[in-house]
View (cartoon, rainbow, N blue to C red):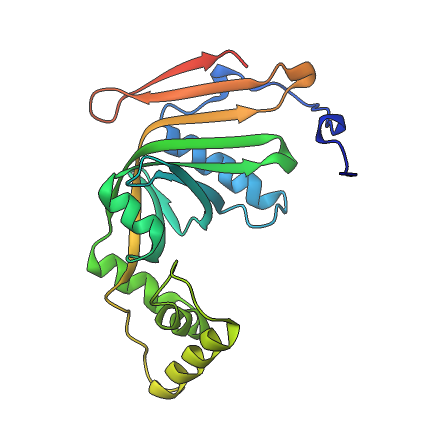
Length: 217
């Protein structure tokens, strides 16, 4: 097989190191700072994160989802509650997400437990979505299940377009909603020269207290 050798692909990192003295006491405060800097850098979709969960069979599985909100308590994302990822999270409510901000030599890893959002939170976010995305949620009721082809998906979408005229509000499907990832461990990674990367891990202690350790790269 003739292809580009991945072992030959190297990108040197340059820039100031990340120091303990520059970190916020709370990981979500630090995340907020880094997220703002990722957005300001022009990075495409800085809210894209790789969500990892464990299947009922014990097999790990990862996929990219979009962060749709965060605060001091954790990170929020939305999906179809009958999807493969949601079923895995319901069966084993533990997960991790990774923000791969390689273009600015940073990564953030968040791990912890997940919980479903309330109906009120789900309704509020669904109402804020573009109309096309709302229709798409109805058309993809069988998310993660096999379909015969693209034509079937388009037929379903067009069918729901006729259910709600342009001037009618589209309700949230009962099977669609969000999860909150409650951080128990958060790691901030910043690339350094000669593989001397900076890694700082926040571990939750009692209540909302956090212990911060520098990790070997």
